[in-house]
Amino acid sequence: MTRSPGGFDLTELLARRGAERYELHSRHLNHQLPRMLRTIGFDKVYERAEGAYFWDAEGNDYLDMLAGFGVMGLGRHHPVVRKALHDVLDAQLADLTRFDCQPLPGLLAERLLAQTPHLDRVFFGNSGTEAVETALKFARRATGRPRVLYCTHAFHGLTAGSLSVNGENAFRDGFAPLLPDTAVELGDLDALERELRTGDVAALVVEPVQGKGVNPAPPGYLRSAQELLHAHGALLVADEVQTGLGRTGDFYAFQYEAGVEPDLVCVAKALSGGYVPVGATLGKDWIFKKVYSSMDRVLVHSASFGSNAQAMAAGLAVLSVLEDEHVVANARVTGELLRSRLAALVGRYELLHEVRGRGLMIGIEFGRPESIGLRSRWAMLQAARKGLFAQMVVVPLLQRHRILTQVSGDHMEVIKLIPPLIIGEREVDRFVSAFTAVMDDAHNGGGLMWDFGRTLVRQAVGNR
Image (cartoon, rainbow, N blue to C red; front, side):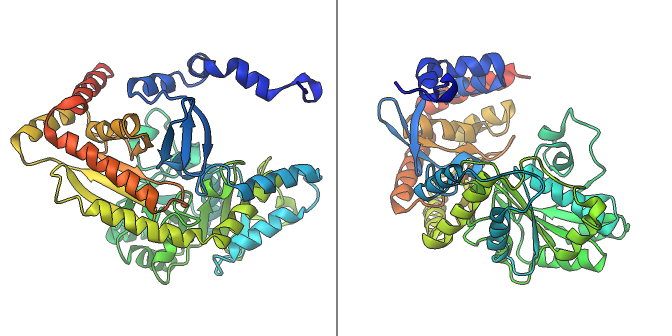
């Protein structure tokens, strides 16, 4: 066996220690993760992945309808992105000298800005939460104001600044004090205007489609909010970390509504190609010039690994694939096919309340049934913990049908589908067939599914 320089051999290490994966996590990392996975039967061992599929050691395929929380927009191991990374490593560039201007960041910024002609400049960081942190700082500096508004149920990241504009208390609890920001209801223009009248608001940061629960902004809201914000000297920040790069059937989700031109736009996740973390904050020229106002302030906001060659190469490859393979159009067409076929099931199943979303970002919401037998079982789950029925659907989708999905948020009866943007009719057929079988089982009133529901109830009660 040929060893790499220094005697380190990754293939040998994985062959020797790979089976310890769950024990290593239990001992050295977040110990609750393997515990949770074992509880719901998600403690699988995946051997390889390609496109929208995983395979286990027995050769069974699993359909990925989660895409690594949206990171794998092109699926796993896209050949164009792989080649770009091999090429950039082989080039042995003089990367991250900190005192030169490499071409790749400028080229990637140019390609990104071509999709947003009203924006002028880009800052590259390493993740979605960093992109949001950048927008928060830039908005405060540009306006000279301290407060940022956000929407209830929003998710903008988990670092301290981004957590301050996170609308979910489950993430915020235990980490106070946070920055003095204020929540307003998504779609409530009156509440927005009341806050703006105080004169201390720098910006509103908003997801055009909220990831938690898959809630699109109401028609006309973003444009009206933009007008209110600008009238009061504040900025509109669009968080496109999950929705951007084609997820909703437009390159950016805010483009669904004519006339919306955010002052700052945050992207990440799919821009990485699933390989090298990268985040980007796009903004107007005058905002960047307020932040970088002199040579003395040239490094007033920076990131140690921002603009690194591998991340920039991955981003450029992703944008090329999006264009060459018509990925955004595919997300629009395939997403509408999936959403419409699922929506057609709402009248068939009384536990199925609503199907909503845009493109390949779809929420399946469950609700209280009418029949007495199902209603009593539903009440049992709700009394223990809201969200258990959705989890009860997610588990058999994986265990029986080998389809990976997720519950959309804490205490939510919503499943979120954010598959790779490359899926087609074959994957739609597979998911709808599996989901129909699970719903049939749920409405039978017995069987393994409700037995598992009782297990979830015991677990929820035990965690109180």
